Length: 413
View 1 (cartoon, rainbow, N blue to C red):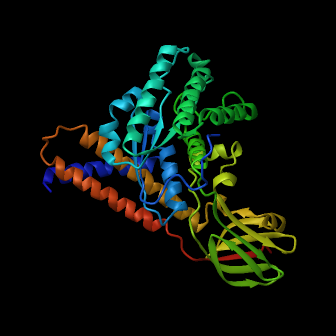
View 2: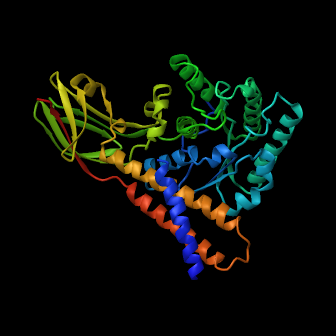
View 3: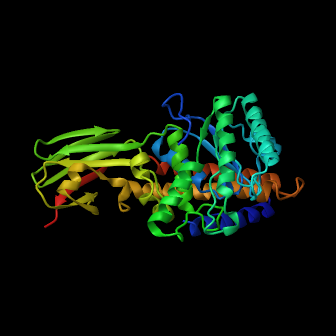
């Protein structure tokens, strides 16, 4: 590689990884099988809400951690300010060039023009969405349609009434999905319900959409959870139930060995089949409004027959949380304990996903599309960036593999 190419790649390193370090119901499926398969190439097509690289990142995190044996490629083809018509025009260049097997399509926010309902605009949206679906199906690509989300008029008063307009666009998406036999995920209705619930409980200043249009991480977590549920994602990470009196254990999606029960304590070794889903700390305000952990992040420990009292949950000799005997009997969701080694591993996976998405975006928009074809060293730089992405993905896949840990539940004295 030329010296100019090496310098360019180094500058991209600073830009991409610096950025990643500073950012920390739907139509039912015909089958319960997860819509994303081993070997898939998934492209997220959309506007600036997709380009934010948040709901896409959370979906990617989920697949990498919940299905650690699968190999799936992801690419974010979101473009700020875009519409369905724009997505159709750039479909060959930005989507089909990646040889996708599955594409999610999310437009509508810009298509409606931020104005009262215009039937002409709505008809143009329907036509463009039909064009995208037809082009993808002709190439044998599986398609998942996403409705537009919502706006917050309390943050941006000029958008009062715009959610009613977006609801009509959401109806178009659902109509196309029903006609074409596609999964069409309603993001609009649940998002509006969660937003209204938050305002009812916390006042009108509550928002998941700080600028009135683009969701904050909490809104993107909601989007990701709705898409994953509609796709038939596996909600269970793993579950262990131990009877401290009878020295009995039941395990789902994990292996338990060397159980020791001593009346007021239990200890065992546990190897899970997956890591929990890494929930962005910036998105945690959603958790009181929508049961994301119950719906998609069930990482359970139950201990029965313990005497009343408070107990430490220890993993590899480190206290990760505390719970009462009653809470342990009901079941503790370990995914909520940030000091769990599996949770820390999942958060490390998330950091690499964020870096990978930034690398993809910089390679695509800055290097590939943003420079002339005859720029000296460009081909070498593109190849270097692709290899870099592959290395990040390989490291992430390694981090996503679960390891055996020693669990102890001991009484607080």
